Image (cartoon, rainbow, N blue to C red; front, side, top):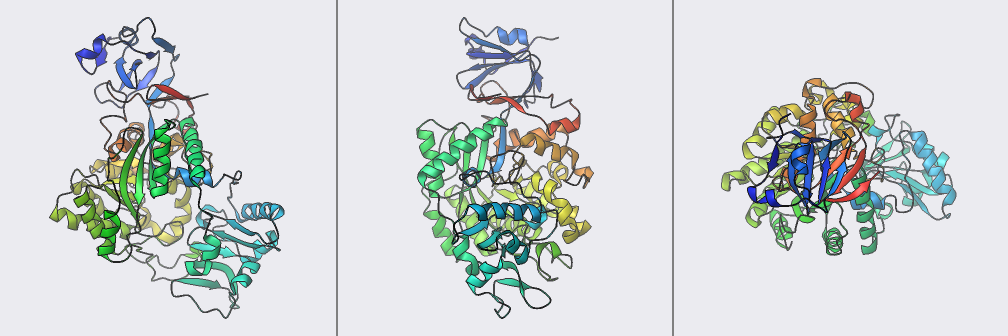
Amino acid sequence: MIRLLFLLAPVLAAQTADTIYYNAKVITMWNQHPVVEAVAIRGDRFLAAGSNADVLKTAGASTRKIDLHGKTVLPGLIDSHVHPIGAAMSEKDGPVPVMNSIADVQAHMRKLAAAAASDAVLFIPKVYSTRLKDRRYPTRYELDAAAPNHVALTDNGYASVLNSKALAKLGITRNTPQPPNGKIIKDANGEPTGLILGAPQLLGQYRRAKPPTAADMLWALESMHKKYNEVGLTSVIDRGEGPEGFRAYETLRRQNKLTVRSYVTYLISAQGTPADVRREIERIPFATGFGDEWFRVGSLKTVADGGILIGTAYLREPYGEHTEIYGYKDPDYRGVLAVPKENLTEMARTAVRLGWQMTAHTTGGGAIDALLDAYETVNRETPILGRRFTVTHGNFPSEESIARAARMGVAFDCQPQWYYFDAPALAPAFGPARMKQFQPLRTMLAKGVVVAGGSDHMIRFDSRTSINAYNPYWAMWMTITRKTIDGSTLNPGEALTREQALRLWTINSAYLSFEEKTKGSIEPGKLADMVVISEDYLTCPVDRIKEIEALMTIVGGKTVYSR
């Protein structure tokens, strides 16, 4: 074997390593030397990477030498889309059970009812019909059976199911007129089924949750970061915080308690007039890049459309006839463009002027096009190439939208979990032509679009049963196999290689935060973030990839998790 020592510069050759990990298979994501045997760390940076013999030459009298006995090492993994505070707060009062069917929802409702005071409102969030085996929402009567003596409802932010007590409390009957911004679903006899779509004014008193305190938010971040470390995540992009969330990050950074490097997105409403949007952005006292290697200000974000799980994503064409899973019938409905195109354009224009990176939640193809229209308008005024403007989610990009994104240097923040969990349920509603456009990751990469891998983690601590599952190895497996939850394979031609999949959770995600020169690969001079894993990612049977566990997670040269 050729013995090589790959050093950043000759000056490093005289430096002594603090720690050396050797006898390993180190997958570096470093183009010059993709696989090596050992790495040396000095301070919070990689000092060297190469053969066992040569890296061990950097040892001094006090250097720790750790024999990994052939284990595989990856660069520290980066999830490009998480919501850690909300996810942790969902289980502050105890674990939230996994609910895969209406029977599961009923069982959880019964448990809540047994422990609740008689005047308590029983509320179960994030219930999506696409995630239930029944492929529909429960009815008022099914909730009545589980909680006959309480006001009870399920909710996902758009579609709510109320039991009979809740309907009575709100005065909703067969004679209630339809709201202008939603629909009260009624059965063949004209009676409300309990399902209410949209119309947030009807349900506001039940949807309003008690806001977390500052102490709650600190607990949530610390707790969830520990769970992220347990799967090998060393960096994340938090995709939606306001001032209180930013203060929580800043507090933990000041106390040196962060164990996950965080690029934090600032969320705005972008409502009102374009002038209102401009003023909303101008009031923010910082911009992209402010901070350090542990806590940095990320993108400016708004929510441009609805969701594919609730049938409100803004599409290029109407949903059509097969929308039973969403609880409505409206063959002309295209979904919701929540932010007008002129506001998206003004947001992009102001972002360019004030130095912000920009992104927007866009789940449907029509929303992708609207966002790219805004970017393109501003690009004609001031080129955005190099600004790394982003499409968040971007589930259904057309060939044209992929080409437009590539021309402007627009990146995509994608979540294969939506493909895996929801494609079988969505296929009848979207039809074969649109489903061919569902996360065409291989095509996007081939056309020069940078795609980062994320989870959109929102609920629960567990990496595999959370909504959405944030286990990175499982997500990589999803992109490699194109398998879905029912065992089928959709668009196998869009499957990624193992190396491509790993890029999504390493160097590509680092690119989204302008940090590919400091992390995302194991190279001398970069931040010493890495994870030791239980399988050889490059050669193990493909189905073993989704079972990989992190054995040791190192951030900045320090072990933050060990099994």
